[in-house]
Image (cartoon, rainbow, N blue to C red; front, side):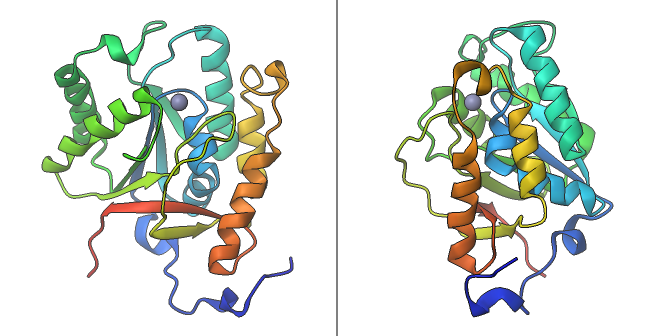
Amino acid sequence: MKRDCDLALHPQAQSLASRYAGRTVLAIGAHPDDLEIGIGGTLAKLARDGARVVMVIASCPKDFDVRMAEARRGAEILGCEMRLLLDGGPQRLEDVKTCDLVGLLDAVIREHEPAAVLTHSDRDFHNDHLLIYNACLPTQRLRYFDFFSYHPTNCRPVPVQFHPRAYVDVSDTIDAKMHAISAHASQFGGRGLDTEMYREFAHMQGRMVGVPYAEGLDVNRMLLS
Ligand SMILES: [Zn+2]
């Protein structure tokens, strides 16, 4: 595949495998499809390279059976496990007290002892996404994990300020990402919405760092040794 600049060799780039292989990575999203849109390529790459990746979907507020089936399919395509935080049926995040949400996420952190957590950012515009980001923040007190935020996620383009501080080269998993997004047919094909903008966006982010496709992350906490 044609590369866009001479940065392509990246002698200083550390592979995800060297940091997370054999360890658990938690990806936390407010709704089914957020993780595929935000970091589908990263999750597929982590799983392929030997990390145990658990996709935590916080809530499924409506169309429960359809959307959970789509979420299971999306996770399967990416090679990840999936679990629902507010399980047992459709629930809205804003109906849950903040302390209860933090308690549920604390339990997930204690259970999985992750090496890294990826979730929404404080730059997001969807209140549910902000609720999850804010509930993830205090879980940092429980143990050390690398902590990243992904680009605000949406089904239609919305202007937001998000400035990645790290990029994951997803050139060899972009097709898995697109496939996993397409698994959420009720949100895209079923509503006449196109998913190609996610490939275009990954391409644009890739150009920032000289690879065909990338996903940008904000770094909330990262230990370098
Ligand atoms: Zn969402």
